[in-house]
Amino acid sequence: ALMDKLVPGPAKIRLLAHDWGGPAALGWAVRNPERTASAILMNTGTRFPPGYEMPKRLSFFKTFPTLGGFFAKTLGLFNEGFLLQCSLRPLSPTVLDGFLAPYRSRFLRESVASFVRDIPLSPKHPSFGTLSSLDKALPNLSRKPVLLLWGLADAVFNGRFLHDLKKRLPGAKITALPDSGHLPLEDEPAKVLKELKNFWTRNPRAS
Image (tube, rainbow, N blue to C red; front, top):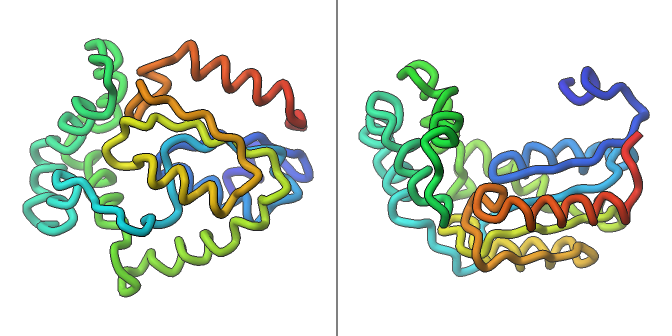
């Protein structure tokens, strides 16, 4: 509904998605391949790769949801702790303030605790089927231009995610960034912007 409101059909759309935004954007794209001009995916995934182990800090919030919810919602420790580790370059106070601005109150941090609860670790989880269906539908995008732009020093979406996603999108171009963490746009902004411009220049324009 949001996409139809922002860009009425049959206009074609260029997607740029990161982290949890990857499944959100891809969920739309696999159902609307005719409206998808291209996709750039950054440090994201649609399933846990074989042999992957969730970082202990993130696993804590999943394993102990009550205590993790208290830390995330009441104390805001999830946001601040994550930001201290997601970039290899120290984030400036201004940038940190920008990232934290939407989550200034316990009420606003409910969404953070909710998204952690929504990470499916087993087939019994209510979101497992949704992500599995999305993962199986990725071949719908096999003929679309796709760029996998990846910060390899990401502790969560590491290189396993990159290569696992490449298996399902074999035609995708890979740009690996060894000196970037979870936030490539913060670690290497000039290099990332150059890659974005080059990709969009070479591939079909959005309507």
